[in-house]
Image (cartoon, rainbow, N blue to C red):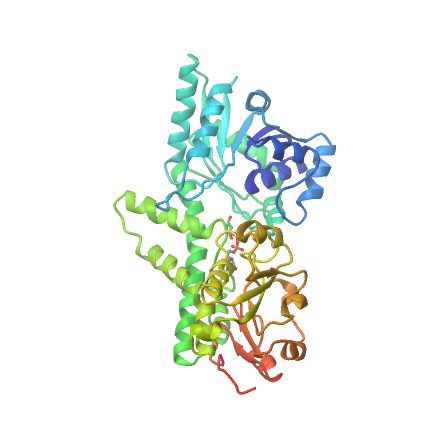
Length: 449
Ligand code: UDX
């Protein structure tokens, strides 16, 4: 099939590449000419394992191309995807300006009956707005071409996006019209061979499904962070509690890891946007309010542990803290809403210096923080420890999982580890003469080194 995708961000690029990989003809459209030129030359602007070779191979095979020309894309595609960003507005609701700009452009250039598929994460009711924007643009041209607007939310995880796209656990399609559903079935047939993963429903339910999925996952994390905070107070170990509850299949093992709070482009934004949607309809989403509040507090928790260790903020003045991990999670260079950003801001506010290492997010942190005397971006985890007083682990990259604790003890002059992702067993750290602070662990105690 011939597919046109508006937006070469995370979702658009991964979706377009995977559709080309299974044999469809794909054109990706973006308003950013430099980005389009780069992609035509195989330069992928995001870090996502496996994506660059796949873009290059499909481009070379003639199945995937990039353009800035919306007219070309409308002339080409039988299915037109909208996959542009929906950043949060000042009030937390999703900003639809990019989605609606694409919808207008689709209406301005549409040549024949089309299926328009919305893949951007959008509030319930957006399909109606997209439909209205396209109709208005068609009316301005004085023509009437039949078209369908379908909701097809994405459930990609950064760092594992290719796998999620090639082997989806579900394909949610919200559509009003049988022909549009049939079109989506043909499009997704290569991903849907062994058992039917496609779920069809009305458009509003599909739109809400995406938010409900992310809000549920965010709720599990905030719930677990709250249990961790209670565990700290009562002297229990949340890692034991996690194992104790995860073994119940109704609860499950996934997304019950306490930590320094969730970040990224989805959870924070989607929880807020769903809360806003609910309140626009006169409903106060109390669970979601709490999920967000707990997460916001949790991002400051590692610093609170530092205050407990050092006694007060004044004691942190002039200290050098090694920070391992800046990205919001491993296998990405994405630092949107990352917990590291809060920690660094708090450390700088207290007059501490930071030596940070992240395997992928160095350029991104340079872009965000610029040059500053209280930040050194290091080339390796070891380099970050040079001259440091303490270590804080913020992102659970695999390479941070088993450090040489004896070496940490030699390097860190205050001999203390703040483990924001519970990567280490307190006993392993403490037997090397280091103090250990984890999230919600009963053993988070300062020892005499
Ligand atoms: C998420 C959803 O998983 C995905 O289905 C959706 O399409 C987009 O949003 P993503 O933002 O890429 O994907 O990251 P994810 O792996 O879900 O992690 C989100 C955040 O939660 C990270 O900051 C991570 O560190 C944190 N997290 C995750 C926890 O703190 N504890 C957990 O148990 C799991």
